[in-house]
Image 1 (tube, rainbow over the protein chains, first blue to last red):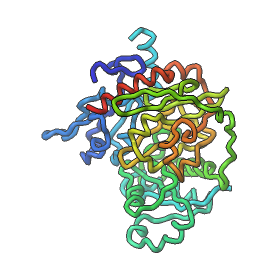
Image 2: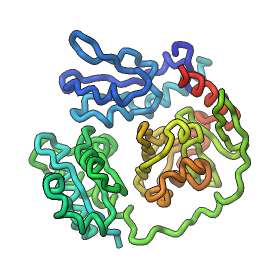
Image 3: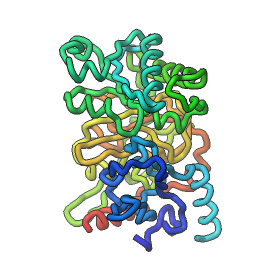
Image 4: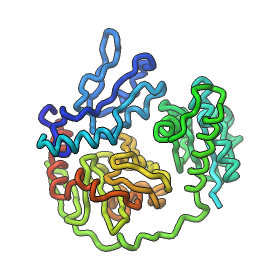
Amino acid sequence: MADDTFMGVKRDLIDWHPTIDYSKCDFCMECDEFCPHKVFERREGDPKLVVANPHNCVVFCRACAKTCGPDAISFPGKPETIAAIKKIREAGG
Amino acid sequence: MARKYAILPCNGLDKLQGPLSREVALALVEETGGEIVCPVLLNSARPRYEKILGELPLIIIDGCGTKCASKLAGSLNLKVDRKVLIADEMKTSALTPEDSLSLGPAGLEFAKALATLLAEDMPEEPSADLSADFDSPVEYTSVTHDKFIFRIPAAGFHFNENDCWVRVKGTRARIGVSDYVQQNLTDISYFGPPIVGREIGQFDDAGTVESVKSTMDVISPVSGKIVAVNTALVDNPEIINEDPYEKGWIAELELTDFESDRELLIDGAAYGEIVKKKAAEAQH
């Protein structure tokens, strides 16, 4: 999905993806089971779950965070992301 | 006068969201006269609640994302009318409860404010449909990918790339999900309405639609105040499958700044191209 765009902006220029707080995550894997876009990836080592494909994440979707019991997943602010997208568009990105 | 609900709250004891759920439930009972359903007792002695669950619509107040109360309701095949997730409400509320299992003044205030908001959105009688403006007929075009045909309104609708549409009449707008969403989810079995009276920003969540296949947050194409939701979808969420652009509308908003919002919206033709691309990617 590297050549993907969102609202005319190259997806990899948009900073929107989940961040895992490993001090809270209990590796229940609910988020990975929920997300159909393969944003997360399970690993043998430590940590057992990583955000492997951040740009597969659907911009403005936060649904995986709502499956997280320990509230270990965070996203950037939507207003900031909207402003950043508009700025890139104005610059012709 | 608010409608009475059976209220099934999270019973968590080890996280702040548990006591908050309980407090919201208690405040809702105070405001509406509904009945609390204890999840522990429900799980071990369902007959205790058979009468209440038979007579009253059910609202679930989940504490954290584990959603034990929702899972319990699902395992008992209870029909759910509304769901609230405290962890999510905490992110959108201006009030920040103290990080303590024993609720402090801010926690109590948060619970009271949320209960008031919910009670105001539980009218005894559904409000009259004020939305005759949106009755004009819609003409459709379609795009195809492989054997799939996706309907798209020919004009008068704007889309975001999150597969949600908006139809604007003056300062009012209706929002909903596209035909692509309903085909992707297949049979929609639950509609979680947004709270009427709440102000939302563009791309904020405005309800959920669920099928056995998946759950999708409705991502609002516009900013504004939610002034109505399509209550018909609560009992009959399959209307979204049948008619996603007209009878299956999700919510109505009083717009805040549509001129600014539309910078990040596209028309039906451009959305059709995106649908074709998404459908192709979904096959791989």
